[in-house]
Length: 447
Ligand SMILES: Cc1ncc(COP(=O)(O)O)c(C=O)c1O
Image (cartoon, rainbow, N blue to C red; front, side):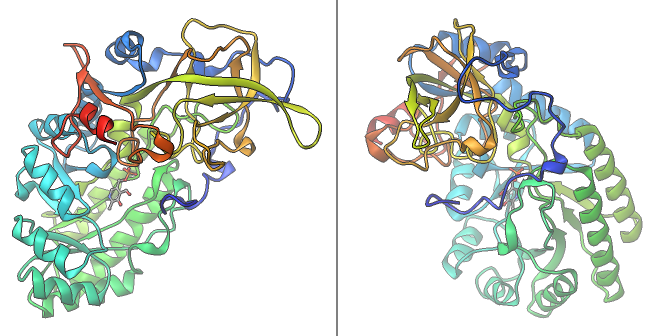
């Protein structure tokens, strides 16, 4: 994606988005009040923390994250949850989930160390990144990690050399169709190759312990899960025929956040109940193939934290600018954008709340504060209704932006400090600790 990374693989296909009745918004004139003005989803602790904030910050609602975790455990009672900590490497979040029994999907030795410091034992972690150097493998092994994702014979040879006797699970490629981020061809291998990779692992003295998939992040269809589980069933049968009996299947991430808007400004409403039903069916089918003893792991990131993190930002300026075609267009510049909290602003549309401001609303392009044109929500994704009376300094709440916000924050691009991180719950807001172990507000001061 752009210059900043590589997660993005295209937008969700229009076919998986709900039909809207909003119609096109024009670049001038007023428009109806947005669905985004609805704060009901916020939850009382997050709403209170945002209302009390008189400066910019990102706030995570620990109570909300705990409830989402509990709901996930109820939906998939037979799966172990290993939080993909890249989605929110905040100590308080890691500790909360650890106390509830979750483990961690670590993508580097650095993440594993951070999770250990937050109190999660190595036995409840695996190394979920198929990309790793010899040094990474050795370091993770020294930290006590014994389960590693793989997808190539080269990686298997390296694991045998630097993590002798480790347990490996092979990631099977998915198309990512139906997801906002398909994750691409960077990870995984086709079903036949997965069988050969695990056979190679066995020959190399490793334990061929399992299989994994990732259906793409913010997966909006149940069909993708159905298809992925069918492929896993095929690979599992092939492995069993060769005398390899996996201990577990890792179903990866991909479970959606619930609070994003579609391009038309209406809620996305992913079919979560159907997704869980399909997953449970698929798990039962895999267990039948394996003869009953198969374990399951899920690695949610976004689903646990996105809806329970929000940013309190402020208006830099609402300007009605003359465009090259001679027309005028409203631009709403916020104090946060792609480089300080809204890295995913190109790919999803967030609910914006403008406390204390009401209509009339005008359609605007929303952009971040930096002197970089990439720091803009593409107008092609729809103009956003904003109060015409907005003034510089007015607070703006960006909802459901808790996933990947902290981890993708630059260290001060354009001299704009990273957002301080707060956590909240029944005791009220307090400074959070990023997983570096330093207070978040110290981070921003030194950013
Ligand atoms: C291996 C792995 N597991 C889990 C996740 C978390 O995915 P999500 O945030 O879609 O749940 C990711 C995200 O990139 C990943 O790479």
